[in-house]
Length: 177
Image (tube, rainbow, N blue to C red):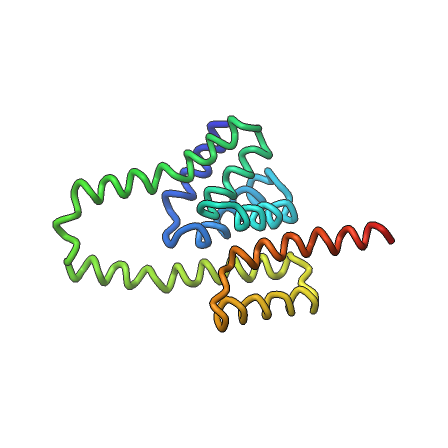
């Protein structure tokens, strides 16, 4: 099972461009739909936890999934599977492609990849939105958060902390009833 987990996350890390958020729909497809390793609702919880934790969201999600499946060895194997492709790619770029950094063809290739990355990120947002039971109250919190971040330049860290504390408070009040 550990080897299968490593190969799955290595494949995800190797064939996803655009960083962590672009990886999320591919992680979801592999571990929720194809392999049935975790449930959809648990994957959404993993993303929420990964976003609230320091570090890249894809690595945090892979660590969560690996730990959920096989404890600490699973967490390490999935993290390595996610990180190694990028590490190897950056190492190869540093070794061989530095002299081509100003090549117009390379620039055009990366310009072509950008729309696909945006589509992957929007796909992840859409899938999470569908499954997250978003009500009017949660939509209002999301809109207020966006306004606070953009208009008032408030750090998202403070909003994540406030959201976590607010959720704890609301759930305590609900549980007392």
